[in-house]
Amino acid sequence: MQKVSKWFTFACLLFSSCTEQDSPSVAGEPLPESVPRDSASAQDMITEELPPPKTYYQVARDVHTRDYFSYMDSLAQELDSTYDYELSEYILVHANRRILDTLMAQDYYYRKAQGIVVEDPNALLVLQRGDSLEIPSRALSDSIQNMLNRIYIDVNIPEYTLRIMQGDSILHRCLVRIGKNKRAYLAMAGREIDLRTPIGEGEIIRVEKDPWYINPVDNKRYKKTQRDDGQYTQLPRIPFLEPMIAGLRQGALLHPTTNLSTLGKAISNGCVGMRESDAWMLYYHAPLGTKVVFRYDLEGIRENGDTLRLKDVYQLKRNKP
Image (cartoon, rainbow, N blue to C red; front, side, top):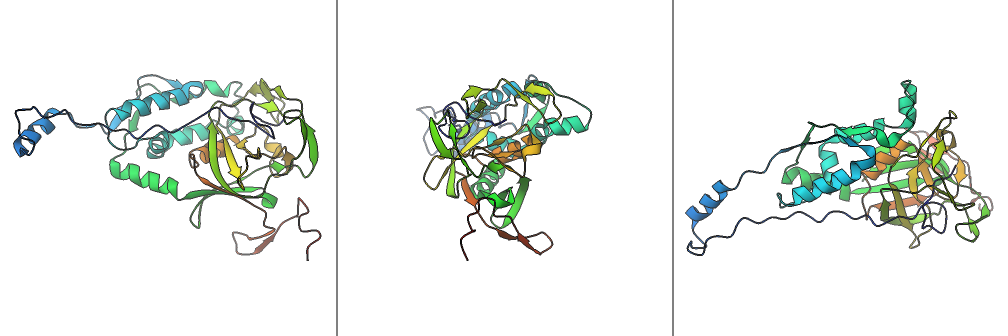
């Protein structure tokens, strides 16, 4: 089963708008008109009257996957009124890594390996009432943002591999599926299109936090998904990312797949699919504007230093010396 968006004209999903929260900003209460503006004692008095910013935030209710994003959005808005530096969803999660660990652990196949079959992944608990979340300092917030600014996403198509890169360092690596080596008619596009995953560079231009899963072949929406074990479950609410590649919106989304058996294969309609846990890791390392590289390198280096030679899955080098 392929996963797709309701707006896309190519392979997967097109998104509704999703933007970052504006950086929070607050100002102290204005000085009384009778107090000189350069009065140190008056400023000290005002500072003492303002309560110090909290370093932890207590979760007031249980938060499940289905309402996780609305909760995080409201939390960011609330912090806007208190802190005068950026505390985006990305920064908050990186300062509280256990949130990401919890989301990744919800992966259907991780749970299945533990003997647990989850029929509705959106009913799983992410945050529990009484949990404490660290509110990062300005220095930590800046450090996290600087880290995110240096990240780029690298996909080597014939290697079926996605890497989250920070400079020359690999932060995360995962197996993916890629587009088929063929052309075919898709009802969603209304014409025959090239199903191969495109090659080139670009950036993340849209994020969909509440994606629809649509079959581009017949343009029908999926309500449930059949897993590799034959079990039907609700579709997971994990963000889809849209990159613009080589200056074009080509439909090659980055998104989760509910079928691990498709990984390492050229089987999609152009999208790059990965397991659910890897999709969560990708989402929190690839905000809007993150650089994306879709390359086609048939040689690489293994972890032990040996040369890695890959199959020319798209036969791009067949007629070249």
